[in-house]
Image (cartoon, rainbow, N blue to C red; front, side, top):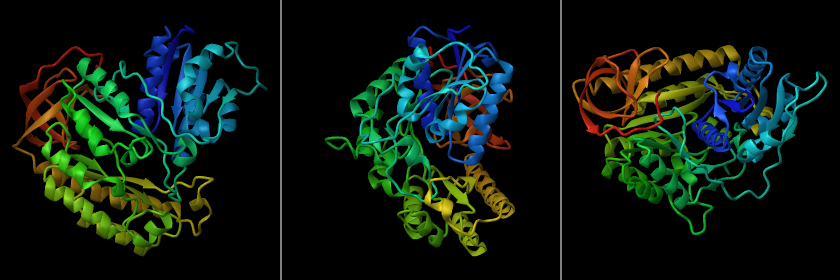
Length: 450
């Protein structure tokens, strides 16, 4: 049992990429993966700390794991482990807390830690340092991304921005990039294994290559990755507006392999709030970028993030955000209530917005998001889409994802990791319904099953 492990990952795509790398390290060291955490000898929780709710969920899950599998060695890593290891080290059942500074060496730490159960008054071992002069990034082996059909390749980590609400630069360190030859090696490995789509991800991916010598731009990386033999589709994760160059937009318009899908972080539609957040743009400049994408790629999905209830946000600020997002050709919004993070500048800002007001404003914006997404999806009814099959969902439905990020539901079982042509026949509550037609690309054997 002690040689079996189970990983649970919270948070962003970058965290999920880190979990895939940890998984590969354990498999390479001879450990066996347990599908059921109740039967695992080692449980690894890769944590998030972007909100206080994320912190709470991590603590709750760790306690649940200990109650349900008291014999397991529980290790907590990731952003919460980097930010506040002392709190995590006191949770019963936790053997070690491993910050982001030590995450790449996690399997070696596990091999060297004690296996005996901790007594009630013992604290977990803590492995964490401050990020000091970190300018290099370690690559990962992409050979075993687990059950994911669309594997993530982390090309960038850390952030040098100073947004007043964000804790991530403190727990991820300064911006740094993976050398292009290592990115290309990972993508080639995934393509050889038969994966049809790869997602490039990072914390501040638009700054890719800034710290490399010589510099190597994101659009150049995209163009090189798109040339990978056997790769059918390439998707870019969320990007900051001021790092989304015209070259990237034009490249996506001229290359069928690059998905017409851009997730650009807005955060607020109020210029006053954007200044308080220290965001390096105003709504006018942001709007120009969005409109350029829509003019260049009419079929593109365009998503954004919004932080609602930032300290000092008034009803007028909220209405400015509502008017702005209504005017923009967004296809979906990710709406988050502001969460106070100790250690950030916004934490000391006043006045705080009442939680009930935050919830109401979030609800209003999510209604707008749902309406915009319906309008966007309806444009494609009766049209053919190239869809990557994802397999069976947790709800027992057979689903896929289009290049422009529309969820498609199939009426019959479809094996995962196949690229098929689908005619959209109608709507579902969150996507489109369609029947598969001819296969676009031959499906090759892969480990992905969901």
